[in-house]
Length: 87
Image (cartoon, rainbow, N blue to C red; front, side, top):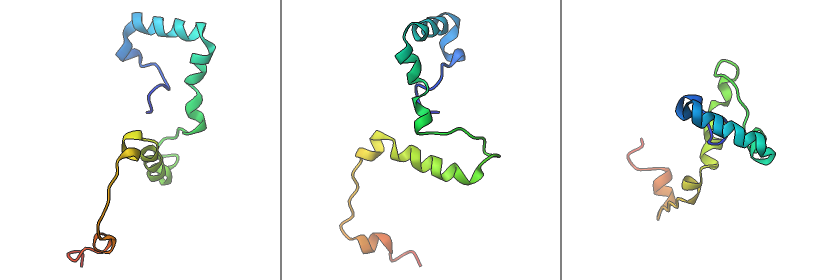
């Protein structure tokens, strides 16, 4: 799950969870941030929509800043695309 879409009660524990919930109650903009993911993601179980798993993974990669900033170059595209040892 993307960061910032839910409060993990097990990870936070009762005291920290209560603090975070109070902070959200007092700050509507911060609370609204927990729902911004709905503009970019949808939730479904594998049983409901198996065919979208690859799309979800692809979307996740496209939105990963580390991967987006990674640059890979190939001096010979044809050799990379059709390596001699492929067939």
